[in-house]
Amino acid sequence: MATNFFQQQDLARRNTRLLVVIFGMAVLSLIVLTNLLVMISLGFVQDVQSSFMLPWEVISSISLVVIAVVGLAIMAKWQQLKQGGRTIAEALGGIRVTPDTADSAERRLLNVVEEMALAANLPVPPVYLLPESGINAFAAGYSQSDAVIGITQGSLQQLSRDELQGVIAHEFSHILNGDMRMNIRLIAILNGILFIGHIGYYLLRSGRGSSALMSSRTRNKNAGGLLLFGIGLVVIGYLGSFFGNLIKAAVSRQREYLADASAVQFSRNPLGISGALKRIGGYQAGSKINHPNADEMSHLFFGEALSRWTSIFATHPPLAKRIQRLDPTWNGRFAAATSTKKNSTEQATSDSPGLSARQSMLAALPLLLSQSSHQLLPAKAIVCAMLLTPEQLATQLAMIKNQGSPTLLQQVDQLADEVSRLPLAQQVQLLQLTIPTLKQLSASEFQQFSALLQQLTANNPSLQAWLCLNFIQHTVASQFSAKNVHHRAHSHSLAQLQPQLTLLFSALADCAGPEQAEPAWHAAWQQLALPKVPAKPVTDYQALTAALPMLINAAPKVKQQLWQAVLVTIAADKHFSDAEQAMTNLLAMLLEMPVPLTADFS
Image 1 (cartoon, rainbow, N blue to C red):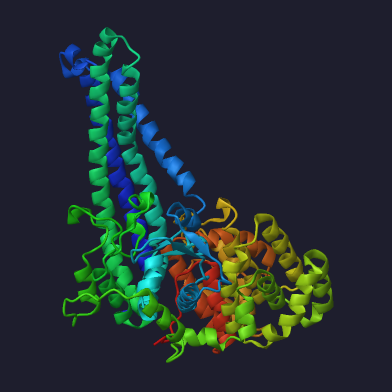
Image 2 (image 1 turned 45 degrees about the vertical axis):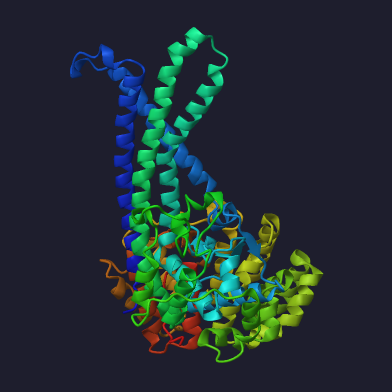
């Protein structure tokens, strides 16, 4: 049965709310234990005769301090991770793989990532390589626009192409299932719970250092209380760590089973992902990650990143259980490690025979364009070429020369005819491929490029041009400012979004043509089932751009209803063309809707 990614995203949101409740209980426990510790270590207990004579002012002060300390620790970690996926990748020692890399193993990796992005109807994410010998990978970010894929050097050396494809499909499943945002919040929450223990360690260290400067009498008087207080905070911190890791493990394990199953839908090859798991079992380094930050981020990975003394803290199900679910005929034997030399030979040959449909998508693109999408200036030229119109051609070319550069204009001249000959579906795929390349721009370069794109579309009010422009602006802008990262989904109902829906469906209904626009409009509102059907307004793309954040931030259940209405609107004229399919795919990516392509990619 196919995974309903809207439902899984909603489940991930419910899991996040459950984490908040459990976190509240953990903080309450920290408050109680810290108050008890203070009263014992500083002698308040000796003065207490009954529960009615407790030092409530002291208790209130300590409680507020605990809440403030935990809150600040969470906010500090949240601020650190606010930029999204690339922050996590860099915190784990990841090095960005540039789209124009000449390394054969890295090129194979990028090809697999591109194939999976096209299959999942997602922007192609940047890829980071971790200098680790273990076989592992992760997806990180708040949303589709800022997601990154990280993978270890060991994975490149040990996995076949099919196995690598299975691992990457697993990570794309996490993106579509809505797990990434939940995982980042879990990192921040656990940091707050553990911070009490860090304070205890600090007090113990400072106590040892300051005791040498005190007189023996003062040292004897104060050291005992400080030592007891520091040890107590460490114990409380360990208790927080114990229960925090239990929470992390329980949530993560179930989502891993789901991602394994979802990955098979993309790869259509259960032996790929099960083969990668078998390879981990037979490899000396396994899936271990040695980076110091691996502990707090262990739940992000494809395989168990740390050695655990007990399985209750494992963030992933046992390898054998994962393999048996994917390959019921498995004989219990793990695969032997692959020599680097052998795998390098495979890299050179495995891409040739039996191209899958995903590989065929890339192979169908002209070589000039696919290679150009991996280079910065030609990638910019591809986007500009997609926005050219015969009626405005001379004016647009002048804009490219004056606001861009003569060199950019030269690239546009070279690529425009090739781009225009592509059907819209392939143009959208080409647009997806340019995303990692454009994310290499600096903030000022992207601002200048974005201004140029707006000028190119100012006199071209069409849905296709609007979608292309806003897809680039929304997806690439997340690289430069946390303000452009989609941090959370809001629980807006369809009724609350009616002003924004009016603008969107007016533009969609116009695609049906002058005679069918009104029937398409009414079909949309009938599907939305809102109490009042407004009159169709004149399409206003500037207002629709302003409405985008509300639509992108809609809750998964709302987006599922919205998506069904989009399909009804486009099909109202009884003709669902390839161009319309391509535009709906582009709209889904812009609104960050988890609707992978339905074609069989076997």
